[in-house]
Structures are given as C-alpha cells and as structure tokens.
Amino acid sequence: MSVEPLLTRDYDADPAFIHERLRKRYGPVAPVDVLGVPVWFVLGYEEVLRVLQNSGGIWTKSVDRWRMNVEGRIPANWPLLPVFQVNNSAFSEGAAQRRLRNAWTQALAPFQDHTQPQAQLLEQAVVQYADDLIGVLAEGGSTGWADLAAQYARPLPLMVANRMLGFSAARGEEVVMDIWRMIDAGPDAAAAFERLYAAMTELAATKRERPGEDLPSYMIAAAPDLTLDELARELLMLPGLLDFTASLVCNVVVEVVSNRDVRASLSVGAIDETVNRVALLNPPMANLTFRFPKTDVKMGNYTIAAGDPVMLSVAGAHADPRFAGALDHEAIRSTRAHLAWGAGPHSCLGHRLATQMTTIAVRRLFSRLTKIKLALPADQLPWRPSPFMRALRSLPVQFELAEGYVPAGERASGADEPAAQPSAAGEAPAGPDSSRTGGLWGFLRGLRLKR
Image (cartoon, rainbow, N blue to C red; front, top):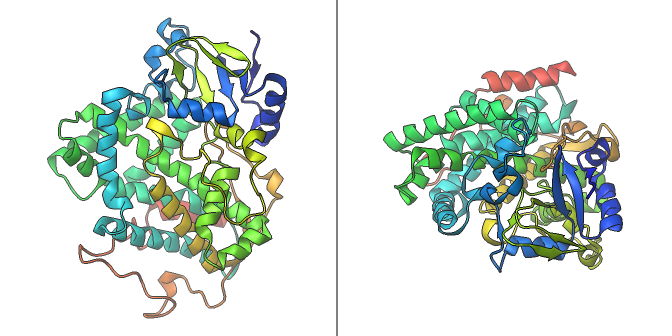
C-alpha cells in the first residue's frame, strides 16, 4: 500500500488540518510514512483508547515485536531509533513493567503527595524558580519583550529536573538539552542519547553510594535490586516528562492570552480547569511512541498485521467527531475523559506533578506580568518539528510588569508577598545559583539583551 509522509511542513504548521484530511480519506486509521518508515496512524478516539487500555493483552510496546526491526530493515541512521532503544519501562510489558512502575510510584509519591515534606519543599522551590525567572525578565524595565518558551517555560522544568535528580545546575542543563535533541529526532539524536545514558549511569552510581532526598535515591530504596543500567534508563524518562510540562505551560499561556473568557477565569482561581482545557484541546504529547499487535487485528478499515508499528495520535483522537462532537467548548469546566495523560498500563505516573508545575508557572506569570500580548498572531507562532510533541519553538510576547511589583533581587525585606515558609523537614531549597549569576542566568539575560 502506498503511504504519504506525515511529518511535513504542513503538518508542523497545522496538524489538525492534516488529521481531518487523513480521517476523510482513510477513516480512523491511516497508512502514513514517518521519516521513511511505514506506520499505521490511529486517529479515532475509541480506537486509541482501546489500544491504550489493552484489555485483551494483544498490544505491546516491545520493539522485539516490530517485524521490520527484527528483520533488520530499519535504517541504522533512522532519527527515531534512539527513542525506541532506551529499553526502559516505557517499552516493557508484564511483570518487568509492573516492577519498574512500582518503583516509579513509590519514588514519585514524596513529590506528589502534598502531605509529604518533599512535596511541600518542591512546591516552594517551583514558586521560587518561577519568581527568579520572572525577575530576570523584569531587569529590563517595567515593559519589555520576552520569549516565554526559552526564557521561562523551558528553564523552569530544567530547574525542577536538577532538583529531583540531584544534578548540579550546569550538569542538569546539559542533560535536558540532550533530552530535547533526542525528542526532536534531529541529526544529533543518536549522539545525544549516548551522552544522556552516560550521565544517568554516572548519577545512578553516585546515588547508590551516597543516597539523598532525591528521585534516584527513592527509586533505589523502592527497588534495591535495580541495576545501574536499569536505573539509568528509567531516569531518562523524567526530563522528557518535564519537557512535556514546558510545552503545556506555553500552550496554556497562549490559550489565556488569546481567549478573553479564559483570562477572566484565572481571576476566580480556575487555573486547574484551564490546564485541563488545554490538555484536551492542544495536548503537548500529540502522538505516542509505537505499539505493535501480537496478532493480526482489524482496526478501522484495515487489518493490521502482527508486528506492524502503530502510532496513536492523542491530538487526532481528541478531534474525532465521535468524541469532540459531544464537548461543550464554551464551558469553563472541561471533560477529564481526554487522553493527554494516556490510559491503561502505560498511563503517565507524573501527571499530578506536571499539572502542579504548570499551574504554579501560569499563576506566578500572570500575577507579576500584566497586559501580556502575543508578538505574533496565534496562527503564526513557530512550532518545533517533532513526531511526538506539539511544542512551540518560541513564544514571543510583549508585557508590562504588574503595578507595584518589584523583582525579588531588588525587593526590600518584607516587601511584596512573604516567601513561602519551609516545612519542619528542612529549609526551602534555593534555586540553582539563587544569586542569578550562573551560566544559565547569563544565557537567559543574553536572550533578553539580543532584543
């Protein structure tokens, strides 16, 4: 069967248009080409949900079931190959996956359960990091221009990754940049993966010898039999989740600035609802990594052969008329039946953390900057080419500081709002280089000065 390329400039600019064209031509399942590899692209909500839930156990993410891969027909330089070679719980099944997900569940619990000291400290840290980043923007005066993707949304999760993993600021910056390179499937994706694996292996060895109050140490405590290789491959998943969060922050900001009703809802504390609305209408993880049927399976208008790759489109499923037709797009409260966090055995375990970070980031931004205006029309914003993420390459805005707001570094003691109080478990953590004089801050100031 002839297939058409999916990842074109038209797709980068307007994937919804491509989804609709494919749906009209092929139905809920379309044969496409992904960077030279034929793939079944699933656009139907019911079909995507059925595969995710996998109640019959016929679907797997193990690349050992990928017929073309087993037969050696995937080019060695295929840009997405490193993504599928990670060999962690995102691609495992059965008892092996349950063992690793249990370690994740226990390790994330201290950060996601708000009754726990680590969750309280992390929330305080996210607030501080957000304020520090806004403070750098404010150094240019009461009005200015900013790229909220590069100068706010992306650095914020980077700082959280540094804290949760226990990396230094500089080392964490290198790691997250390589995660982006791998996710974006660029020409240096393979080299980025090798550097990432080495960094995570080094970190795993360090935490086994000197455990701390961080994610790797909690995972080791939850599963002491984890090998260094297993732990390193699991840790590769966290910065990817945080890059997802950066994209969600950007998408929420665009929705708030572009929709007057949504902007008004922030004043009544409906930020959580806005985040959920954006996850539904513009999910950052637009497409999921491949699944493979263990036996031939009928789906849509086709029979998919055992071992054929299937890419599930979350964005396409949300636009399926069978699902979208029942939505009230004017309602402030949106359905939770969307698939932005996945479903079934591979559903996202960190969705509470991602939602919390996004909520804090949006709340702090709009409380300190007023009259935020897009520097480009919303339909002309540049998107990063990616087979999986729907993420802005940049988010240029013009802004004014809120009346009476003074950046933290210039604030007299007791001015503005008081700092969050640390819990009894310890002091609230400082941000990476809280004096804002390190390499990251120099890079961010450089972006401001270039304008």
